[in-house]
Length: 244
Image (cartoon, rainbow, N blue to C red):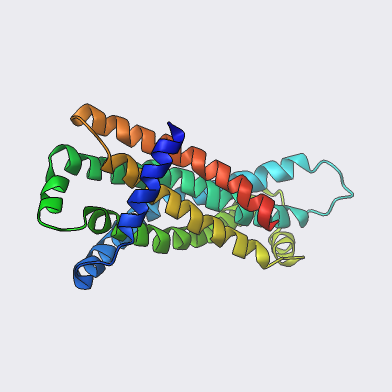
């Protein structure tokens, strides 16, 4: 059963990347999806990121019970954990719920109302027209959202650490700038790109092959979120194992 769905998924991707009929239509759709995915998710990502950074700083400070360990290490731990894991992974899991369910329900509704059948009758490549703009919009905007999330998480950690008295501003900044490895940002962007691909294509697959009515559309949305989250966590481990 798994190989059956994986084969259908690969065939769908093959149809998605087929040469577009008219580039101008696709370009407009890509920009619209960029706005929906990027700006539409900016608020929730910003709120989550600030509090993730704040909680990481406060809990790290709580666990540093030894006076032999400098307080500046709090900034370094917040920086590395935010860049490598918290921002790309947690933000992608949130986006799987928000963006993924939206894509699955939108395409699933078009399938059960026979709009996709109408597109295919008119000779339009339905997978390419419906899925490719969402894929490109996600691959462009989700890494940008992760960059914003990293910046806001570090800012939230700084504010929480200084406000709680757990660390001074100078110590936190010292920790941020000490022993920084730029390659961690590369790993974060690789994760963001792969997670964006998973979120958009898995959700589109679940919606595109929906059968039945409104109840099945809801089930497809739920399956899209669950499978996307599992795939994100598995790929997170694989990427960490390969790159780190």
